[in-house]
Image 1 (cartoon, rainbow, N blue to C red):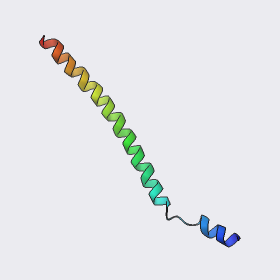
Image 2: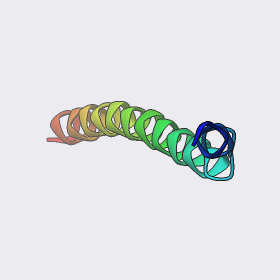
Image 3: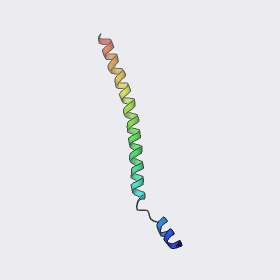
Image 4: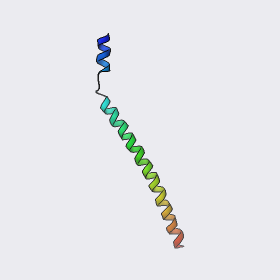
Length: 54
């Protein structure tokens, strides 16, 4: 029984997939934050141009 638990705990085949998943989630969160900030700035500039042209 002890040997099978040690063999199971020593397996790392799914570890890479989990790391890639976490990395993809982190990249998605950073991209979402950047797009939200950029979108707000573009919206502000757009409405300032419209207001100045009237």
